Image (cartoon, rainbow, N blue to C red; front, side, top):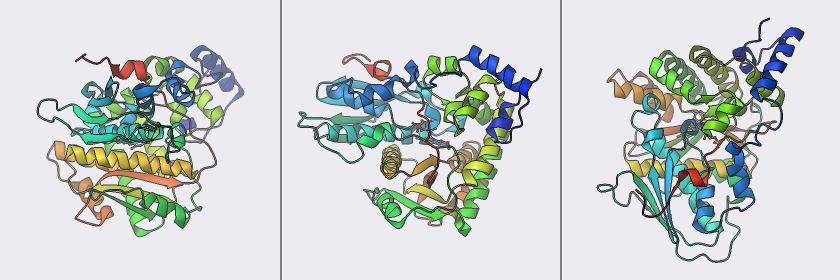
Amino acid sequence: MGYPSRRGVLAGGLLLTTAAVGAAGYRGWERGSFGDLTDGTAFQPWRDWRSNVYQGPLALVAAAVLAASPHNSQPWRFRVEPNRIQLKADLSRALGPMDPFRRELHLGLGCAIENLMVAARGRGYDPVLTLLPDPVAEPNLVAQVDLGSPGAAVAAPHLAAIVDRHTHRGAFEPRRPLPQEVTAALAACVDDDRTWLEMFPAGSDRGRDFVAATIAATEQIVADNGMRQTSHAWFRQSRADIDEHRDGISITTSGLSGFKVRLVMALPDLDDAQFGRSWIDATRDVHCATAPLFGLIGVRMPRDRSTLLSAGRLWQRLHLEATVRGVAMQPLNQMMEMADRERQFNRPPETAEKLAAVTGDPGWAAVFAFRAGFAATKPHPSPRRGVTLVTEAVGAG
Ligand SMILES: Cc1cc2nc3c(=O)[nH]c(=O)nc-3n(C[C@H](O)[C@H](O)[C@H](O)COP(=O)(O)O)c2cc1C
């Protein structure tokens, strides 16, 4: 008896036979795809933040771990003192071929910094942030936040959105543009002169070039064994896998709706070739095809670590602002990933040139891309390693 293919379901074109549903049902029971898919320990950090389980500086770490990170790699460790939090890069969680210059790793660390700062202000602290406080002696120490004494909790902007922000990989409403006041609020999230934000409609020439270059880059990533296998290695395919690792991308966050998520989890695992093809299908048929708007974050110094941390803060801030306004977002970074890979091997900068053309301003280098729109469905939370797994006792290495 054959199972329907996971890729077929992920691509949205499914014809199920009764026998196949029965087979999938049995396997689903075996693999834990019934019941609440987000009730396990891997999702506890979302509940911990919502119910104020942690107090003092640990509460701020509890907010930081809910931030976005590339492939949900969560490349962070925290050193916590009563009045200070230090954030260190965990290079054992770097994405290697997908991120050879650790651009995305630093953007993800910037996301964690933003959540931490939002939570600190919300808890009444007056936080002072220092990026890369000692780059020579401690290069992996990316940020230090001196907290001072806590005051009364305040209704800080974005605080409530920390727990509701999730990457949305499902269909958006392609013909529903963002109202002008929303794009203005997103533009106002840029708060320094080191970062730049541009947004453009999917139907514009620029939007069409963005789509063509993003699909081409996805195909090239999938054709690159190192990149495809790395991405597949971070793809969690069963409840047990999610609960064990508490990280990575997974079927539950692929943008499928409830029934299909359960069905796909019940089917045999995708090997890396099938995973790659379903990524191309979803990029072309869902992510690019249904987006009304694309955006780019640019910087002047794309290889400067502290600049990348600021750009990551901007992404997290944008996504929190979008969440407040009921707008769905998804990063789409295949162009940058491929451009970095070309640079790593000194190949002709084919993708880098397309990216520069879409960026349109030689003064800025795009380091992050995304789509934004309204969606009829709600995205699922992704798993997290909680506070105790990522916090070092003071005095420890
Ligand atoms: C630097 C960076 C790059 C990312 N690139 C992509 C991407 O290209 N495609 C995508 O679907 N998600 C991308 N993401 C989103 C992450 O996969 C997501 O943040 C992570 O899985 C955690 O899920 P959450 O954002 O829903 O909490 C990126 C996130 C960051 C911080």
